[in-house]
Image 1 (cartoon, rainbow, N blue to C red):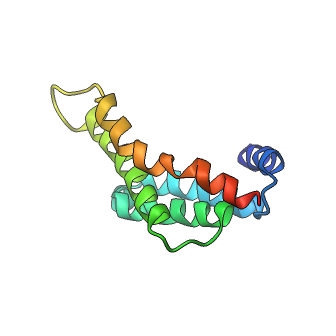
Image 2 (cartoon, rainbow, N blue to C red):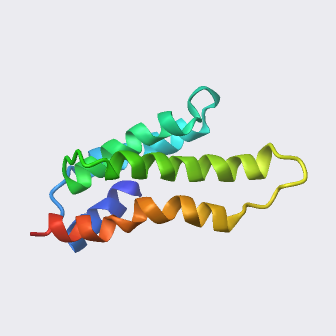
Length: 116
């Protein structure tokens, strides 16, 4: 199912990435996030960063690295809200939104650049 989704995205955006490798990285970061020994944002962000570099090109401007880390941090924050913090089972969506705003803010620009 992931392969088909990324294939559709590739067609819609005129992407040139390896669909199977991108789908594999997507699954890898979800698996990494669910394992106790690798649930930290640093570990989770690595396959996410690789996936974004495949899709949007190799860039060393810090946006991908920072964005992947913040996206992984938002996921970990949500996990902790739900499972670890007694009396605080609901996710603070405003905090999550703030964590995701920066990594997602550069993606429209990157998509436009990749289509040139």
